[in-house]
Amino acid sequence: MSLYASFIAYQNYTADPVSFCFFSGYWNPHTFNYTKMSVKKVAVVTGANKGLGYCIVKKLCDKYNGKVYLTSRDEQRGRKACDELKKMGLDPFFHQLDVTNKESVNNFVKHIRQENEEVEILINNAAILFLKDAPEPKNFQAEQTISINFTALVDFTEAILPFMKNGGKIVNITSSSGHLCRIPSEELRNKFQSENLTVEELKTLVNSYVEDVQQDKEIVKGWGDSPYVVSKVAVNAYTFILHRRLTPKGITVNCVHPGYVMSDMTRGGGSITPDDAANVPVQLALTPCGAGLYVWHSGKAVPWDGPDPRVYIDGRT
Ligand SMILES: NC(=O)c1ccc[n+]([C@@H]2O[C@H](COP(=O)([O-])OP(=O)(O)OC[C@H]3O[C@@H](n4cnc5c(N)ncnc54)[C@H](OP(=O)(O)O)[C@@H]3O)[C@@H](O)[C@H]2O)c1
Image 1: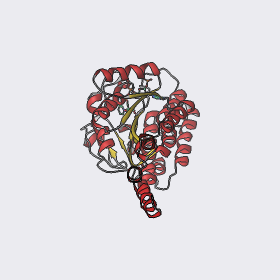
Image 2 (image 1 turned 120 degrees about the vertical axis):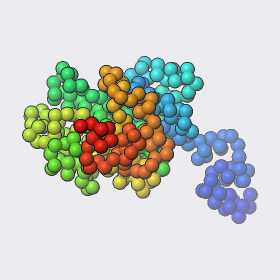
Image 3 (image 1 turned 180 degrees about the horizontal axis):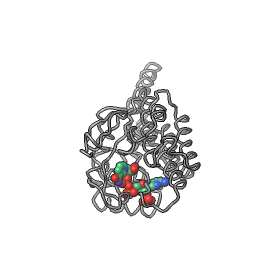
Image 4 (image 1 turned 90 degrees about the horizontal axis):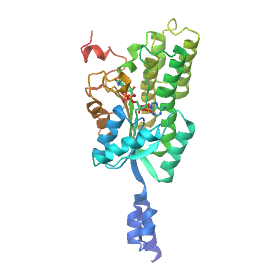
């Protein structure tokens, strides 16, 4: 190749590595493996061995043009779920992932790096709920609920962000319990919705809730009596912080209340099947209607600091 041809070819390379290889005469399958084309785009769903997460994976396998990770903290339950989907002709990929376990998170991130993958879709679904009759002491309930539903969601997301594709989508599964009106104290509500709130400040705020529960002061301090509410309000606050931070990268961040879902979390009670509840999260992952939104199971975006949507959407009194 002449110098000029090399220059043109280099320009082609920087614009499009495949063209470079083709026009410069360097085309061969080996080179191809090391071009941009080998970066695979993937979708990741946490807590996907059952319930809503499982149905989200099922729909993504059908609709998303990329690899879909079904992740689960328990390897056996996760592989079983994957096998069920494979019997339906779908092709999910299993990876163990306990979002509260640093080693497990590191292993997953390492795997993504080794596979040369870019995360185009991240759906943070894993969560727990202690029902009203749960026998565990309230300190334990608060600590566990905050740790899994909020802290682990934040830490896992932050670990994945360096591998997130520009223009990607993050969907945080929240709840009607994540609406700001569920926190009784106005002072706390103002802190949660401050536009200047950083992730570290949010973590400190939520940790102060756990300390207040330990000192039996959560009611007088205006947190209310539900750790699940605090965890999901915090997930919403994180969603909006992340949205502000990731807008320059074109990454769309939304959170969704999937409805009262018939799953193990509700002991089978509820008003919407996990399959139907998966529709809105999947739509937000594939073709979001906007960014920085709190979306109800009806598909309607609701103001986080507005009136309680359980009344004006779900018709509850
Ligand atoms: N059900 C409802 O009415 C309702 C309403 C509003 C919002 N949501 C939200 O919807 C999402 C899905 O709930 P669901 O109803 O499908 O509940 P579910 O059937 O109980 O499923 C929860 C999933 O999260 C997983 N999980 C729990 N801790 C984990 C951890 N440390 N690491 C990784 N995975 C973990 C569970 O794994 P194991 O099987 O190993 O426990 C399970 O796969 C949750 O975010 C929930 O808060 C549910």
